[in-house]
Image (tube, rainbow, N blue to C red; front, side):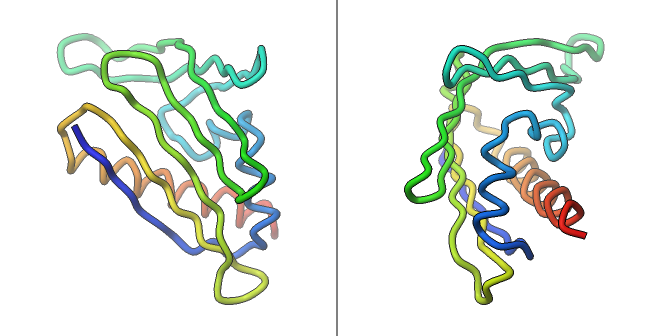
Length: 137
């Protein structure tokens, strides 16, 4: 079991970052393994991801997840049903200037591959930063 957290400064106003992250259809732009995300039925999201299992050929898999947008506090909560109890939160907080903010990701999973999870968190944060900063240019 593990709890993980990481943060990054993003050079856009907090409201802009939160609006971008609140639209789950943007997920595939900063999560490299995701091919598509389609919201439906309230907080449910159907996601398609490209996976590379150790014991099987590469493949696209589709599954259900949930994402809840918490306007007060600029947070998103998400989770994926299954044996790994995978869920977490994104928090958008103030930065040192009005045109920057701080993004923090908290993740809980029953997976024990800590280094791989840290790498995935870092990759997601850098992907979000790049995607949203590029939309501001």
